[in-house]
Length: 200
Image (cartoon, rainbow, N blue to C red; front, side, top):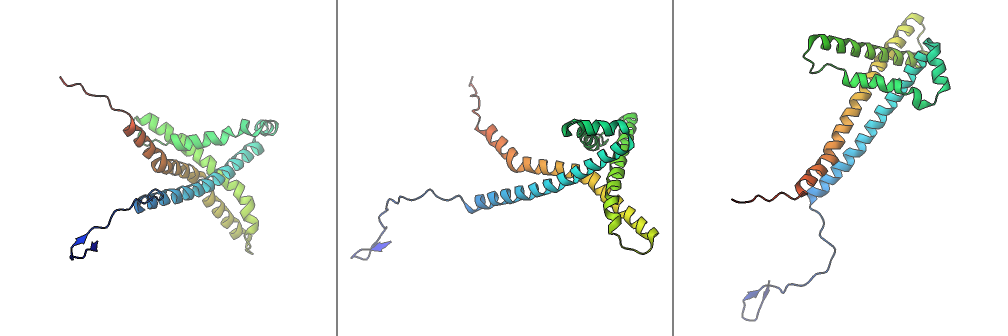
């Protein structure tokens, strides 16, 4: 506001300001910052889960190759994508065969037994592979205690390596969908032209 000679105040003349487009509101900036940061964190979690799954798959293939000569020959004579379907099948069973909402009693028992058998196999093979790494690191004079401690640590880590990668994968995919794809899908649905209702 500016004052004239008679004391009355008049509004300043509006100037045409040629400037950059206005910045997005702070809430939008914070939302984008949160999305990008969360995406980076989820990518890190996916990397950790992928490494756990990869090592568990190697342990499973090593055990099968050491136990069955036919599988050892198959693994040795084929490319990686021809035998890595075995860890993929194990993961699919652990993800999709858990009888969470199964109401048929016989099918519930069958799925539960299969899930437990595959999970036990995964834990055993992963723990067996870890045992060869952990046991030399246990520096205890008593060989019996060192052996049991190595087995306990290998089994505990084997449970984590067998159970967590699939859970991490489902969590990461769900959060990425909610962060990016779900808002995009909602925006696309809102932007579609709505059919005009004809009045009678």
